[in-house]
Image (spheres, one colour):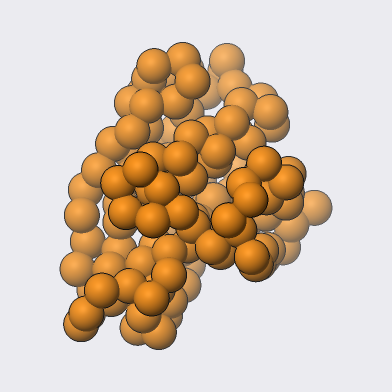
Length: 134
């Protein structure tokens, strides 16, 4: 699975670290945005495995670290659920500007709750999948 290391800015101007996983052959048929669990990172094995399955099906996947987590800038202590949703909206805007708007949102645990809220602000999203969301 080819992967590009990327960054984009959150609403506070902090750099958020991301990976764009691409299909092994050809251009993506669609794009997905993946939100990790509370205090996890984009590099969690489960996230990488799900991303690989999606890329093998032709879907490009942007996975990123929320503000203050993983390789992203910011102080985690200054974040909350609303800022996580804002990070998702900014990730979707970045993906739309640079590649194409995400049609699928995937979220694990608290990331699942966040994608449910973010979906209302993202008109191009046609599907949402959650894994163990509260």
